[in-house]
Length: 413
Image (cartoon, rainbow, N blue to C red; front, side):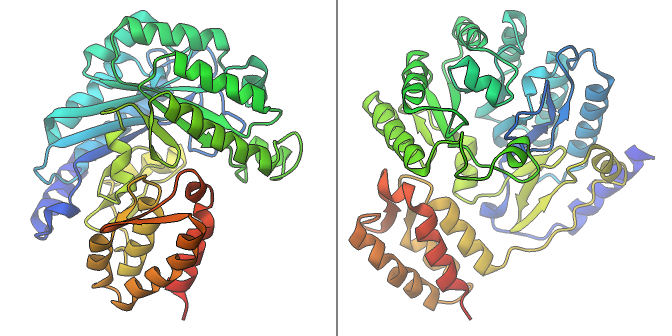
């Protein structure tokens, strides 16, 4: 019955698919793997906790999820454009067995095909893989890994609910180099409870010493429903003060750029030629597939988020994975383009905004220009030829102020 539904849903999609601009069609896919050893205290992602003993090869829960995930991928419409990027996120994708990853990748390639220079990224956590596993991942064609480090102090890792230690981090980095990953990223979090400037500086230096080609820095956000959301309110001790987190951001920008990393996005730094191509799809507001529990997709100007609970997601897949989503309005497209594009170091081009404003209101472009004037005077916004961007680091630090003003003006009345 399930295969019948998938087959007929696919046929219907192909038959009714209207002709669209190729720029509205996806060439990237995000795959959500929701399994973790434990839930970190700051995490509000849709994840399923396995504990320290179970993995993909020993868990029936993981096996069932991979089966449902593959059924969803098999039901997706095909647009005859090869995939250029794939990102396995989570969760902890490195808890999957190589055979399970192989099944997913083989299905993706069979259904959509891969471009010759495809970027395939896999999020991995220290302590969740050994040399055999990471070698197998490499052999599958995965050519970029993102290591969830977060901090280089054992006490901070414990305060954050992480399952790994600093020793695990160093072992993981050694294994990554040993199997020959030329492109690997490392994640850090600033503003953790009890975190000091000295500890943050140490984490930055030790990250640089790993020879990672890419480093992401995320400022801690206290989300409702998380453990941190129950323990703390923003500004409460032992959280660092706003002044301290601002100093952390400036320190990160200074040390990483001095070490040769390009600050190409508000939270991301990469060596030359080592930006994350997949994440640029989001920041440039381009279309993408999303597969798996809680994953979002953006196709033909429509956004859709899958169920965040396991059983609801399974039921949705078994009913044919029918996507019923709303079309993004011109104003929504404009606001999303501003919010995402101003995260990038190169900012936005006036011509790209002009095209969107032709669909909403030509006066919107004038409103944007007028709103930016005070921030240009402050030095937070810079105008270069046909583009404008936030300055680094001050403009990035005050990005919420700039964006809130733009949003208020554009949506007024």
